[in-house]
Every structure is written in structure tokens, then in C-alpha cells.
Length: 430
Image 1 (spheres, rainbow, N blue to C red):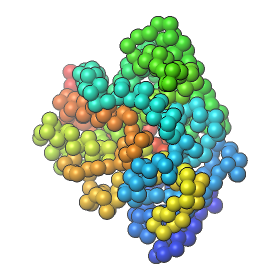
Image 2 (tube, rainbow, N blue to C red):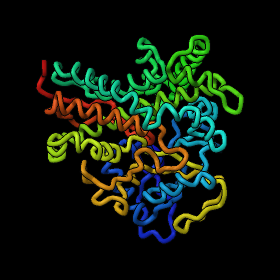
Image 3 (cartoon, helix red, strand yellow):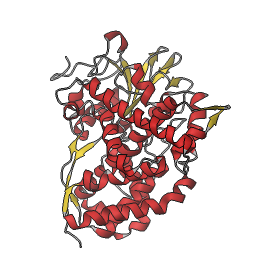
Image 4 (cartoon, rainbow, N blue to C red):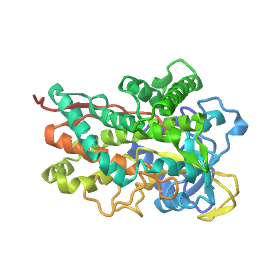
């Protein structure tokens, strides 16, 4: 059954025992990460590729549009599938849960495309996210991080998400795209709704599909208006570059630009924000690692940031669709099968990481899949996220090194490992 009870997994030949848990149930994703991983650890050991019924439906999709899926939970398998787009495509959808096609078309942009269209569209915007370009704007990111922490310093604490974590990615992405300051909170609020519709707090008594549609319309309408303005009044921002860019002699349509704007509004804000929150909580719990970082932040922030991302695994799942029959661990997958990649499980894989539930800011090597498993859909903003995390934790260490985070209130989601609220305290600074 859905809801209070978990449905049994489909039996996997050769597995010693399959856990009685439904990975597609929102009740399952409402549990703490370590509790969830008891089941993932058993799957990694006994059934690394297993067949499941369709995930819980909150949008009212018709049953025939909700096929089952194969769960992939090991690190090496996540990497292999991510790097084999010829066998595992993205153009049939990338979300674990099913959604209306018009929603996917208006929100996923090149994330849900395959070559050659994916390559061309991603190529248009990738120049803004290269390590060299990020290095060019790094001083501005550091200055914004400094301002955010110094403004928080006199308060002595509060909700860390509102006080610190959400602010730097909001400013950074808005500056890059060209979102006016007056519109930034509205844009981020709408972007948040797109990934929180599985959480009852997000939609209250209203149908989730209605809330989702309104948020998508807000972002699409805003992006279309901004694109029209930048056609006539170009600036130095990414939106200006998009409206004047060409692919094979053709310019992007406003619908294509709006879909990319929706994607960037979500990916550019949520993932860095939640990694920041999870990392502060980990440093508050693991005092030895906090002391290690504070002892030599210049030397240790680089490896610390990689552990922050591995530990947080801010994106929990993405899916692919098989384009041809493939075999994985003795399982025969036909063409057209949904395959869901569980990144948090891969980042806790005992075969890939020594003592994976040990938070270790000096962990090397640390080839996590927090930014994806490689391949054509590797996170475009990885360098930008790393720069923001180095900047914000450098300033926290400098200005309020005694900051402590309480237990976070987590988003109930199978997509984003999100922190809704998390109280923090520190000695106020003038």
C-alpha cells in the first residue's frame, strides 16, 4: 500500500533478502538520511539493480503514464550509466516522479535533452560557467559572502537558511542572469515551489498540480518579459547573451530561454543553499572536523568543500531511460525502461568510500557524485558552487567561528535533500 505502509519490492533473483520498503513513497523520504541508508546499504549489497513499482503520485497522473522503474544504488553503476547516453537517454525525462509533459518541456531545458540538441544548447551557456569565467567573478562572490556574514553577525542567530544559506546563491545567480533586485525574492520563491510540491507545507489545502502550475507560470512569464527587454536593451548579463545567441543560424525561442531560466533558477539556488546548511550542521556535530578546518582554512577549504557536497548530496535522484536492451548485474532491462540513479546511496557506497558515514573534511580522494556521475549532463555550475561554498565558509570562519546549528527541519522530497529551516546560534559581533 501507499501511505502509512511500504509496499514490498519486487523479488530479485539471487538476493539474500530484499527490504520491505517502497523507495518511491514520500513516507520513506521523510525519514532521516541514515535511516534511509539502512535499506540502500542492503540493496547495494544484495540487489544493486532492482525493479520497483511506480513512485507515489501526487500530481494526479494517469496510471498508464506511470510505469515502474529500476533502482541503481551503487557508485560505479551511477557513473557508468551517466557516461553512456547512447544506452541511457535523458530526452524521455529526468525526474524520478512522473509529471505532465508540458511541465517537463517548460522546466527541464537541456537537462532533458540528448545530443545533438543538448550539445548545442548547453554549449551556448557553458561559457558563463567555466572555471576561468567563475574565477573572473570570484572576487564579487567573496565580497557578497563577506557582506552576508557581516550583516548576520550582530543578530546572534536565527534561521540559518534565511540568514545566510539562501542569500549567496540568490545574489550570484541573479547577478549572472540579470534579475533585478526587486524581483529576486519572487523568482526564488517560485523556484522553491517547483521542488517542494511533495511537501505538504508547500501546497497546504490546494492541489499540488495547481501550485506547481502557478510557480512555473511565474518563472516563465518573468523570463519571457526579461528576454523581450534584453532583445531591445542588451547588457552584460547571461540573459542578454541568450537572446542574441544562435544555433546553426537560428536564435533560441523565448520558450527555450524561459525553460533554461526555470532550470537555472532551481539548480543555481537550491543545491548550493542546501549544501551550505547540511555542511554547517555536520561541522556542528563533528567538532573535530570543525577544529581541523578552523586550524588552517586556507589549506583545508578545498577538500572540505568536496566533503560538504558528498555529505549533503543535495540532489537525491535523477532518472534515465534505456534506448536499447542492456544488462546490469544479471538483470535484463528492455528498451524504454526507466532507470533511477540514487546519488545519496552512491555517495555512501562502501566500495567507493572508506567509512562513508564518517564526515571527513580531509578525505582524499573524494570522487563523489554530488554534481552527477560525469558524462554530458555533469553539473554545469559545479565550479560556481565550489566557489560559493569556499567563500561563505571562509567568511563564517573569519567572522562568527563559534556558530552552531541545531537539528534541521528537512524537506520531504525524493528529489532535493533540502533544509527548510535550521536554527543557529553564535556570539553576536558588532
